[in-house]
Amino acid sequence: MAIQSIVDEQETEYQKGVKQLYEKGIKKLPRKYILPSHERPTKDFATKNGGIKQNIQLPVIDFAELQGPNRAQVLKSLANACENYGFFQVVNHNIGDGVISDMIDVGTRFFGLPFEERSKYMSANMKAPVRYGTSFNQNKDNVFCWRDFLKLMCQPLPDVLPHWPSSPQDFRKSAATYAKDTKHLFVMLMEAILESLSPAPETAAFPTADGEVVDEMEKELMEGGSQLMVVNCYPPCPEPDLTLGMPPHSDYGFLTLLLQDDVAGLQIQHNDKWVTVDPIPNAFVVNVGDHLEIFSNGRYKSVLHRVLTNQSRNRISVASLHSLPFEYTVRPWPKLISEQNPQRYRDTDFATFLQYISSCEPKRKNFLESRKIC
Ligand code: OGA
Ligand code: NI
Image (cartoon, rainbow, N blue to C red; front, top):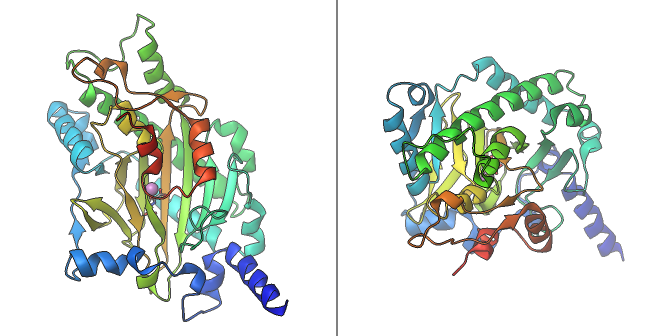
């Protein structure tokens, strides 16, 4: 009885998140966060990389150049990045340094608020416009990961904005500006990606007339699409070798635009190794999500990634996930399908995805695997 109540008390404590634990000054990682040895981050390094930390220089896309006379060349680099890395970094993207630093700053201050203030936004409802929580899938994870998060639905902005945190008092303003700017960047990048995928280079990505069904998918993606923003907080961790900030996963949407502060932590799987993405100040790390892998019929790859923790520095990242409107079905782009290139993925809607993630641990690429046509 007494033991059970201690266990319950601890569980309640863990549900409050890792910021709480860090602030208590714990010196050892509680068992709740200790991964089985084969899932620990050091394991890969020890066996595959001989204990040496490997970093990767991701392909860098110069957004200004993409808009200029070298567009064709940049589109080739973009295609190469999406095929062989599933990731790239974007520089010269026109989003002001102030917008970026305000977002990181207001996110950092949000996580600095007393727990009572942050916890107002805790919700078990996956569809809530705002959701504060911890770990990866808080209700399913047996082992918790070392992350707290704030998820913000961004569409339609005027409807969701009043639900966003009212404290810090500049939160809504800074986060809304950031959401609008990243949405715009997503649209521009997606336009380039459609062009890079398009089988006939002379075909514009947006044929205006015709009213074909295929164009509707393009149009929805650009104008009506869904956007979810996730502010991640990874406090210093007493034993970073035993846990992860986020387990290996792929992102569900078309593209994720990730902003990381100057603390490294993101790793991607490349040539069967885990490699660290070094932060470039003010750049976005962009990755292909499951929906784009499906849409490209497997040409562009949704790649597994995870987050390492560290002992000394707090890390903040902001992920902006973009896809079709939630009620839409994602399928391979009909333009790409032919006898030589048959459809490789089943049509997928968001409801199927939500059902999937609430029924099992969404680790690794299980969802995407489940949509493949063998
Ligand atoms: C994510 C993600 C990486 C990071 O939010 O999906 O992969 O560095 N984040 O926080
Ligand atoms: Ni991710």
